[in-house]
Structures are given as structure tokens and as C-alpha cells.
Image (cartoon, rainbow, N blue to C red; front, side):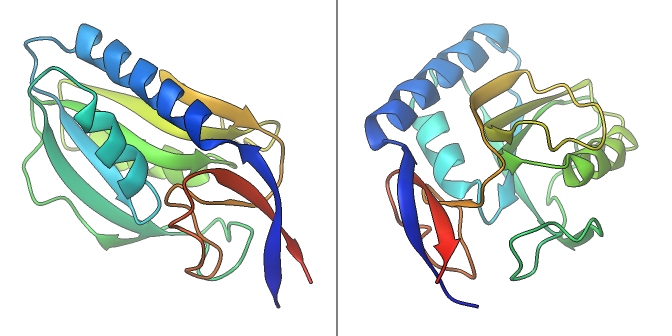
Length: 175
């Protein structure tokens, strides 16, 4: 199936501004706590990178890679861990950094998986939340934007590995 960019949903300047605001919120909330930010690969790497450059606190970074999409535009609901954390997180403050939350099944799985490792706390920072798509209740403390139920690309998000490089969030359509 072929796709093309449809429309810009969130312009570059809005992304930069909200990312800086979230970085400031996290810096205030975690001053002196040295949290571990866990970037969920691959989509969250751009958001995570911009986020940490706007923080004024010490943080550590680790990554997890999970799959629930493959090359599809809808989550399969089956979560697989493709890359696990490198660090022990017991007793540490964790912030899961996501690019987008739609059904919430992947995030719910990640939170339960990390809770079993006995961290001091777990919070979530997500750039995007698809409104009305959640199948499980979620608490996202640091949220960038709520968006409609459309498939989006840019700012690290992709469709079949395309369009991660875009500095804005755009919708795609089938052609």
C-alpha cells in the first residue's frame, strides 16, 4: 500500500515550544532526583533528544525497543520487546518517553513490565495522544498534544520507515 503526506497537523514551532515546556516541567519535578528517561525506539528518539537538550537537571538515558505495529498503520495489540534496558532501574525514578499513545496497550505493558523491576516511580512523557483510542486507562503526566485518530508521521514517527526526518507532524493518506 502506498501513502503520501496529507496535511501538517502540528507545525515545527509548536513542537519546539511544547517540548521545551515539558522539559521545564520535568526539570522542576525531578530536581535533584537524577531520573532515567527511557526512550521507546524508534519513534521517540527525536522527541527525547530535543527534550533532554532543554532540561537543566542531571538525567540518564536508556532505551527499549518494542513492536506492536510492524509496517502496518494500526497496532496489532501484540507487544514484543525487541531491545531491553541496559541499566538496573531498581529504586530509580523512571520517565517513559513515548512518541505516540493510541490504544495504550503497549504503554500499559511497558509500565507493568517496569513496575516488576521495583523502580522508585514511573511517569510517562508522550509527544502525542490519539483521542478516543485508548483501550486501557492511562496516566500520562507530561503530554505534548492530543490529536485525532489519524496516522501521523514526522518528528521521529514513521510509516514503513518513511518520513521520520520531517520537522513537523503530518497526517498521511493512502494513494
